[in-house]
Image 1 (cartoon, rainbow, N blue to C red):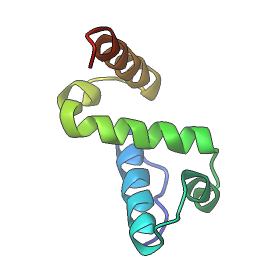
Image 2 (image 1 turned 60 degrees about the horizontal axis):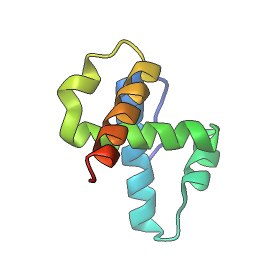
Image 3 (image 1 turned 135 degrees about the vertical axis):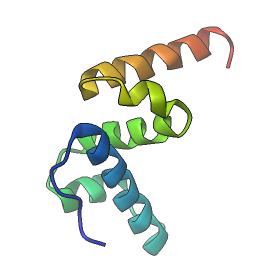
Length: 88
């Protein structure tokens, strides 16, 4: 599978996630750092893309409404905080 190309942020998150998962299936010891290196991106940015893509499984409608990734990350942080405070 080829690394994803530059796309709108939501599509990029999903493409990075799919790329990472496919690499993990081929090589179970594959890491986020290796994905970042393969994509010539920072580990932190790849980690954020993967986090957003994972949250889209349960919150896709809400996440797609955000204009940018920063707002989506704030939403995820808020939801995680809510879950933590609720004991979940």
